[in-house]
Each structure stands twice: as C-alpha cells, then as structure tokens.
Amino acid sequence: MTPIIGVCVKWIGSQPSSGHEADARFAQFSASDQAALEVALQRAEQLQARIRVVSVAPAAARSHLVALCASGAHELVHIAAEGQSSSTHVARELAQHLRDCASVWCGDYSLDRGSGSVPAFLASTLGAQQALGIVGISATNNNSLDLLRRLDAGRREIVRVVEPFVVSVEGSMATLRRASLAATLRPSATVVEASLTSPSALSLGDFSPFRPRPRTVKAPAGETALDRIKAATSANSPQKHSEIVALAPEAAAQRIVEQLTEWGYLS
Image (cartoon, rainbow, N blue to C red; front, side, top):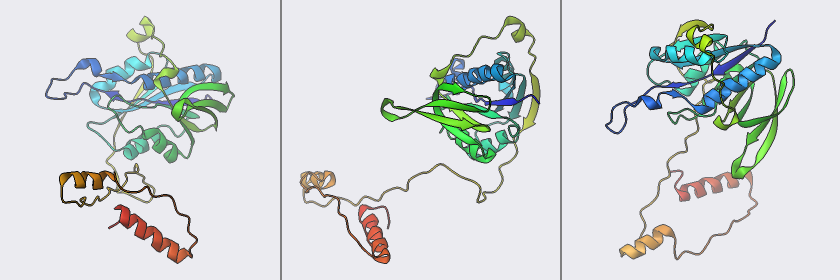
C-alpha cells in the first residue's frame, strides 16, 4: 500500500489594515508552509509516497492552493471556510482528512501572526508524536526521523519521531521547488472539496492555549509622587531572599495560598 504524507498549509489573503486598502502583496502562503511542503516532497521521493495537501481556506484561495500543489502534490483537500476559527476547531477538521497519513508536515507560523498551536492540537487529536520548531533533518529511516530542533539561546537538540508523527518546520529549513510550466497549466492533483462543520460544544477532550490570570497590583502608598514611584519600583526595599521551610502538607498549602494572595495572584 502506498504511504500518504500529509501537508497542512494556511492561505492568508490580502487584508485591509490601519485604514488602508487591502494589499495583494501580502496574500500568500508563509515561508514555513512552503518549506513544509518541500520537505514532505523530499520525504515522498524517498518512500515512494503520495502527498496530500489539506487546508482550511476561503473559496477565493482555491486557485492558489491548486497552484501550490503543482509543485508535486497528488491530492488537495480544500475545506471551505470564511472568517477565523479556533485552533482546536481547525485541528479537528484537518484530522478528519489526515488519519491515514504516515506523517503530517506543517509550517511553524502563519503570516497573520497566529498562535502556531494548530500542529500541537493536531498531534493531540491524531494521537501522534509531535516535534515542533524543526530546522533540519539529521538522519532518516523508513518509519522514523532524527530531527534537529531549535531551542532558546541558539541551542539545538536532536529528537527522534516514529510514524505516525506531526512535525512543524521553520521557513529556513527548505525552499519550495518551482513548478514546471506544464504542471502549472495542467494541474494533476485530485481536488476534494469539503465544508467546515460548525464547532461542537466544549468537552473534556478540548484544549485551549494557556493564558495566565491577570495579576492584581495594589496602588503604591506614599505622600508624594516620588514616594509612590519608589514604592511601586521597590527602589528602597531590601531584597528578599528565597526561604526554605519544612511544613506539614496542610500548613504548606495554606502558606502557598497566603503568598499568592500577597503577590496579587489570588483575591
């Protein structure tokens, strides 16, 4: 049976901003989405696999998706949707067309400054391994890959993933090949049209990105403006050092609650 490699892309149309008219120059796929397609094409050549591109995009993006698939994709699933949808909703829709894929490749970011959380939600929905922020491939096997992952402060680490897996790559990893003139004029990819279903009610299986609770900051005390600034910035306050205490579980829990209340995280 011929393996299938999935690729998720996001089309960003020209949007008006700051009172100006829409600028078509910014209507395109991100560099990381194009890099994901190129890496998937290279992987497909090694495994003699088929490429399936899946995208949740408006109807106006169909021609752009077909042109993108001219680079070598075999199938295109266009999930028609207008407006914005949550990352969890998009991930569930994408997963419906990617469950039979040996691997799924995504871009690390989109041009609309999205959260970049869809690959993680997609891996969770598919029950697959995930590797995010990939900048290179160090070793390849038939059903596993050793990937080079970017860390903070210029560090790198090598992670191994085994099929099925979901990978998000950075735009610097690869440059998408140019489609031939014949492929551009006569697209050969099979196009499947689908519609975005309405989001279901939240369940225990739904997730959302972490958002820290706002911290309540009390007004600084002081008779003059200078005193209040010093109190707000703790300019004249002695530095507090960490404290290690050994308490019973109940007393330790009460101490934590009191400290969080003092810092303004609890009310």
